[in-house]
Amino acid sequence: MTASLNKEFGKVGVLFGGRSAEREISLMSGAGVLKALQSQGIDAHPFDPAHRSLAELAAEKFDRVFIALHGRYGEDGTLQGALEQLGIPYTGPGVLASAIAMDKAMTKRVWLHNGLPTPDFVMLAADSDWDAIAKRLGLPLIVKPAHEGSTLGLTKVTTVEALPQAYAQAAKFDKAVMAEAFISGMELTCPVLGAGENARALPVVRIVAPDANYDYQNKYFSDETKYLCPSELPPAQEKQIQQLVLESYRTLGCRGWARADVMVNAKDNQPYLLEINTSPGMTSHSLVPMSAATAGMSYEALCVELLRMAALDLQPSPDWKV
Image 1 (cartoon, one colour):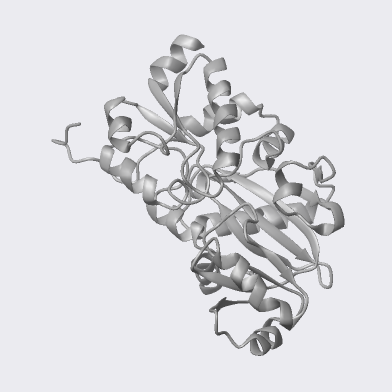
Image 2 (spheres, one colour):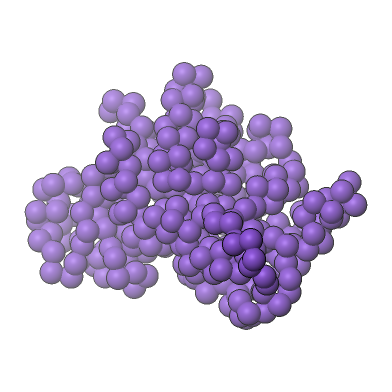
């Protein structure tokens, strides 16, 4: 196995850490991926873009890279564009899909244009008409940065008076801030692997957080948050969620892998797409490995499969040289 995987993959860079607000989580994800790949005999090496330049990435002569970066400068299309320029195949979606998915508002616009259900939203400013926003979206509502993940800067707002403070909190993370209608009900997530018609949804994970608050602490560090996988949903509903997530993935042009978050409204059982993560977490608490395990795929096998799907969006010109 060692010889065959080395021949297939060559020298592999695992990109993790980075400069985003999600650096702490990325360090944990990358350490897990690196260990898993090395355990399979793959010639994998760590690379932290926060401490090393992309010029060094090119000089290392990597045959492909596994992106275990989260958030900006790793999940938002910028790094993907640099890797396209360098001609180094990478895991996960390409430049355009990554850039759109990182922008929650643009993602929702694309989904809505294609008839996919997602909660109503409004972009905010410091001088927004808070009463009008509360009237449109209802209370409670969610305020969050448009370009951050891991629930960073997110606030559940229950009164109009709390909106300015929630906006100010989100604005610490991003100049683009949005308010979103709050959906009360089941919180689910579902990973997808592959591309196009060959993409497949993995088992749905149901999230049961303390007091229904799936914040940064409960997401990554709490042992009180419960994850049900199998989800214990009726088979027809599980299939409905998987199909919706597949459509959301294909609509954005994703390939490789991603994980979409869904809320199911308790009032009418209607599922709503919240967002899609194009470089999901790979920590001990992460949900893609959990879902893959339910499908019979080990953490190590998942990492190898993702690496196998590393690609470029654009093929270099025939006379192009490194």
